[in-house]
Length: 243
Image (cartoon, rainbow, N blue to C red; front, side, top):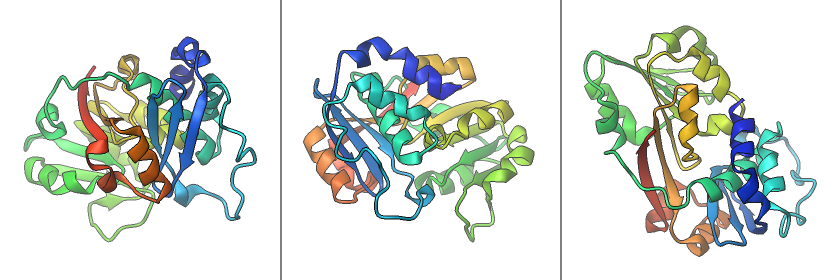
């Protein structure tokens, strides 16, 4: 599984570091290591159980070994898994540079392509509709958009797609492996949760569109105050990578 691969790939480097700060906001989870490296991952708040105390170990994460924090990615709990992915991103994403253009240009979408989008990426929707022959959006949350389908519809519609854009939150909620088994076309991961890990190519992923943290202090404050992608501004840098 992709989760286990990500955890084990950076084991040696993670074991040399510890957690110096952790913020779990409404939109994102951010973790900073004692090296200063900072990683982001989405907070899947709609998947959380009811209650006022959601993490049993809350208050005990500062100072723990980074590898122990990364191992939380394999937990079924979405908050713990988000901490794990953010920890891995803190190590994997540092120093990554773009080697391709924007997602639309890099994917080469044209009128012959059927495009599948797992997750709702609003800024890309109209441009993709204009360029492609068909756009299928798969989203867990209901929508009035006639091209948006429930997530279970991927089983019948996704295999016909020539290009597939997948939210990296699928790593957190453990759906990515099933999605990739259905994919047959050009495949990309998208969003600030994206780990820039070249070995993901082994799973049929060719493109990684995400971001790296440029201003850790500002990112931690924005996350703490319930901010999301639109609030980050220049505190993060978008990266487009072909692997």
